[in-house]
Image 1 (tube, rainbow, N blue to C red):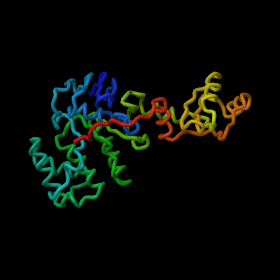
Image 2: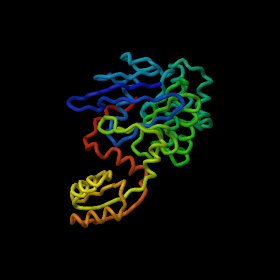
Image 3: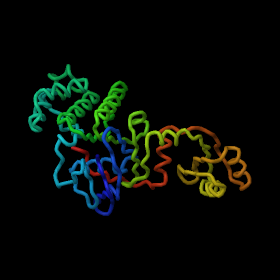
Image 4: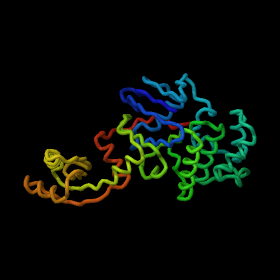
Length: 309
């Protein structure tokens, strides 16, 4: 079990992670989602012990941070791509990591097979494609056979077949009873993979919901309205009991309206002499549903900290 309570990390005047609390349990895949700069990578670094929090706690299996990186036998994470480059072969590189971690030589063959690289142990890593390099990073994270896995954007660089493979792998690792946490900027990336979604914005928790709850949120049809007077129309619709999320720039706003039909929206706009440029009823995509969750959080320059190494 990962337990994060009021976790905060400040860099100067800004907070990369701001009073963040969530849990991730064994046998599940938990996705940390949010736009760039939301605090996802910083949160993982804090859980891994690569950064010290300004305040709050992050415990893995009941063990809090102790001022040093966690053991790879306790928590596995993706090494930085630069850490795997060079003249060595994949087999030699993983063997060196295995020796450092106290893992047996047979473990290297196991993770190479598990990541689809069993035929590549003698190939030099510098010749790897981005997709193969990503598989190698996952193999390195699995070397210690840890019960907890923290993967920062594990689908990055993978081709379509690799994405399907990675999703199956994540589900299989969770089915073994491991706690799996992944990050991503797009909800569609983890569709059908994550059991729980933890949505971040500006370092803060925006929403924590199950995959089924997110799917139900998406399934609810809504009215999309384009208008140069977004604030005025939103006030009118909310006054009539509708739920409204505003997106877009001032003067060219779009409203996502639930709890009201398109006909009623149009009638109220006409009654209040508000020009409508677009009026449609549709089901949102995963990305639109995610944007609606994070829409109340103002944009800001990201302060994500360093990549996970």
